[in-house]
Amino acid sequence: MVDSKKRERGGRGPLEIERVQTGVRMEKRILKVLKALAELHDMSLGDLLEGMVLHAFEGKAPFGAKTLAQVAELKRIYGLDLDAAASHNLREASRRAR
Image (cartoon, rainbow, N blue to C red; front, side, top):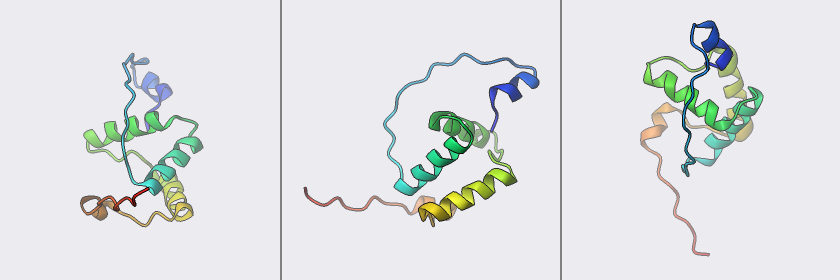
């Protein structure tokens, strides 16, 4: 992930942006893994997602070997058995009447 220190070393200083609040729905275990990963790296969930998306937009991997190992462990802890191939086959379970 690119943090402000790395950007500064790369010749650019901090970039001023506008953030908006969003209500995104996602698979429960994926969210748990993402939140735990953000916590491990002492960053917000939003910062983690922004970095992942910006890397993906450039066709770059957002994580190195150490972070991928952390992701694998978090997936094990939270029982996340989905992979990239599953992304096109996910459907939300029917909600029970309350």
